[in-house]
Image 1 (cartoon, rainbow, N blue to C red):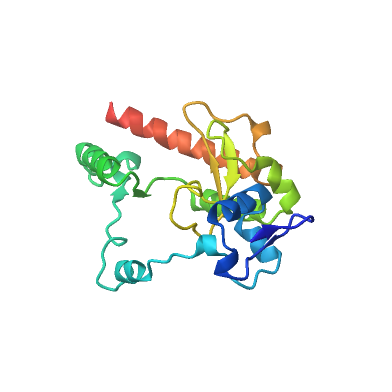
Image 2 (cartoon, rainbow, N blue to C red):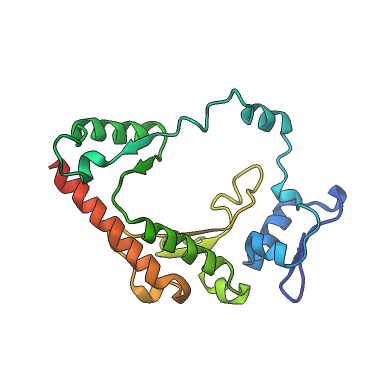
Length: 210
């Protein structure tokens, strides 16, 4: 894979030409992400995205594997619902959150009270960002974790044995929310609306647990 003078990213033809470090840097420096590869008319998957341990991947994706079916799902009804008869034990929720953070590092929340309309608008906003022209998105492409808003492809691009086929945007909302001007115009409104909804949920959770 190489970056052309027009900024397009192309795939390397053979393994003989493959220099992983060089390919990773070329991909990263293009700031075009995975979508840039597709837009450039990619016909072969670049080697940096190829997982060579196929047996391990096959074993992990078998129907008997429960690794991805046991991600903690935590019901926040005990925080949101004011009906005592429907509220779950807050101590139980606290325990589940603590266990998920310690053993998983993440969890899924249901009955969180954030309107479905906000969530759908967020999905649309993210899509609008990624579908912008590459030159517009490049100004946000970074691996500087101190920035409030970041767009890049694979946060662990240089550490992982193989890259994943994805582009990502991330926005730091706590403890200090970003200045609106730091957010892309194409999704600024929905990001702010989502941030307000998330902060309200966090505040409600904190006050409920006091």
